[in-house]
Length: 138
Image 1 (cartoon, helix red, strand yellow):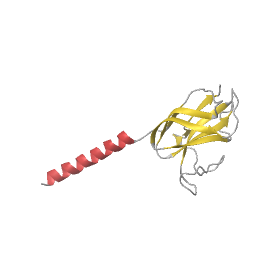
Image 2 (spheres, rainbow, N blue to C red; image 1 turned 120 degrees about the vertical axis):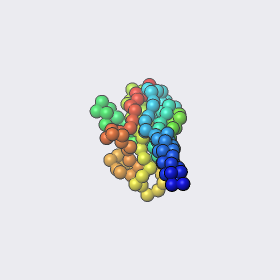
Image 3 (cartoon, helix red, strand yellow; image 1 turned 30 degrees about the vertical axis):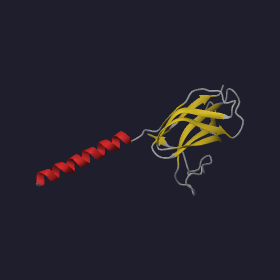
Image 4 (cartoon, helix red, strand yellow; image 1 turned 180 degrees about the horizontal axis):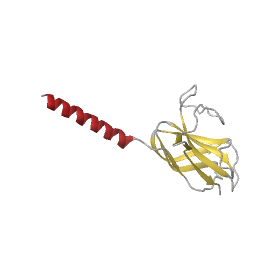
């Protein structure tokens, strides 16, 4: 009976680890250069380990995130065709950084509270690097 209990415990542990590994998500953003004359920027796919935000930052040749010009909510897991409404004009040829942000540290859940450099709803990093994709507007 003791052997059956140990075997069951081992199987439970292994199946739990397999379930967790199968359901873990590595954050990423997939987007391409696009026309934003309709006031919207889109990402084909965004993967998030937890609920959060796709945040659209202005950027330039320095490739540092600049002011936020739009954002859209993300669910944990794969998010297909994520569209962020731009909150200010963006000209053809501008560079935009589409970045995954978390939903942590703020006062209210479901309210985007990040401002440049703040910790609330801040950027997600993977191995110390921002999870983002830079695009050029057409």
